[in-house]
Length: 436
Ligand code: SDX
Image (cartoon, rainbow, N blue to C red):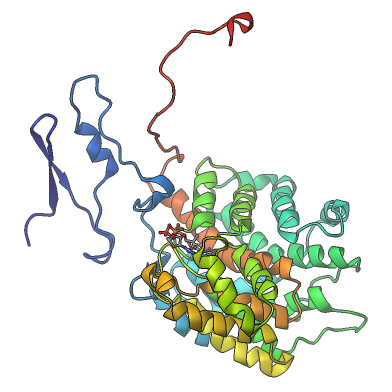
């Protein structure tokens, strides 16, 4: 192999430049040049220098990160080096959250302290209930979440101390702990039901089920199969490197705003139907299809560009999303408790046809994490519009891990991309009476 450099010849001037190639862990996955090294390529002294133009960052690394590794070609997903299928099988959501944030699996004592701290931060200020009460009964829970997470920043002014590790740690406990409470309270509000407060005797996922579904019983007893299924679904959502909402978290956090405001921005990004809103859109799509017999007709609409096949496709995975595989296995376990969800048969038929059809094969469109998750959530009794909120609960540790990594990265500064200007050249103001 030759030198780790790129030699660039600018044919406008005949000049050549040599720029270093830098690597991450793998020499053949993540080799890059520094975009700043292109600025020396100029045609004259007053030339600003060459930019790299990359709409939607299709081929741009915005950071160096060690939180998550994805290989889209081989369908690989690892958190801090641990394969997602091993974590889904052997870990818990809170342990995986610890791993994402600290970089290592916790010892027994570390895990005990971590779980204790999160468990004892699940309550929210009573005033937050007044915000939630102010929403219409049919307000989308993601809209409530964006509002209430952002509002939390006003209850913890010390959270502005983002460079103080102790302050960061405290807000990390609070955010991971309070997301389920905010989500559950939003759900209860939509039903006109009283809020069910956290039960610290239960696990993280068991407590969430209790706050959602507790009725008149003294103590809610979560079904262990559903409790575990939900915990695994949260594990599968913990992080996914530089996805749209993680990018929002990093970009907004780079202004050194508090983490509650940054998480609110990440929630807003996740709310979009092309991102975290897709699991909700999949359910609506399956309901619209209505039966297996209608699947071919729907596929025709997708191929005619009249509809997207929600839950299919991915910016990185050009193979089966490894999380979708695991979620399909969870579905069978959940349906043993809840009864089979008839929408699964439509989803399976839709997948079967899509995986054989050249339109999808050519574009390398496979089921992603959102394709089957909604079917499980529906079988577990969650209303469709809360699905993106479930995604946000699982993704909060990942957002915080990306945020903290950004703050501690000496190369990172406030995010401020360049642009390629294509507007009007200078022109003089035209008084109103002279305009045509
Ligand atoms: C998540 O980034 C992450 O990691 C996200 C995520 C995470 O964990 O954070 O994995 C979670 O957001 C999963 C994605 C959920 N979204 C959906 O399921 C919505 C449906 N999917 C598409 O909108 C789309 O696949 C995206 C947004 C997911 C990816 O879009 P890209 O990378 O910009 O790809 P593209 O739109 O350029 O698609 C390439 C081609 C296009 O056709 P051509 O113009 O080349 O002919 O494939 C087509 C697209 O029209 N296409 C689809 C399609 N997805 C892409 N056609 C029909 N149905 C689809 N779902």
